[in-house]
Length: 171
Image (cartoon, rainbow, N blue to C red; front, top):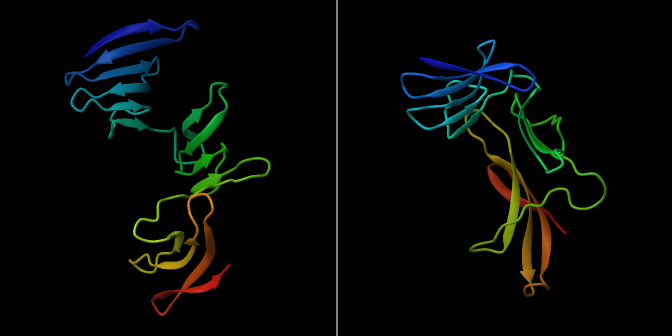
């Protein structure tokens, strides 16, 4: 194992180390790995010595600490992943698995897709029931006519009853 010391402008020592498998590690003076490149896979790790994918970011725990964040050019966070797996878009403190926030009025979430082979697009709601995860509800749109830019359509709501998904309301 080879070690070279680097000193930051604040005088904090860092060491650059390599191992027998040609991996490279950047460590602090307390021997805590901050950055690693695996010599066998080429995977890059931040906060881990064993990156398990092309980019592995490991947070500091399993709670609500920030594991990963994307910010704009003014360093204002836009996308956050916490140690507990919660993802925030527009918030740095997501309280649920996907938490989206945008101040003011206007669209907060847009789900779009081409209705290939049909005229509808929908969002399903499902819950685990034993080992199966069936759909218990669906909200969607159905294009009923018109042409591009002048379409007409319906908003529909469906629920499941005795294993069959059926429409309950159309607006």
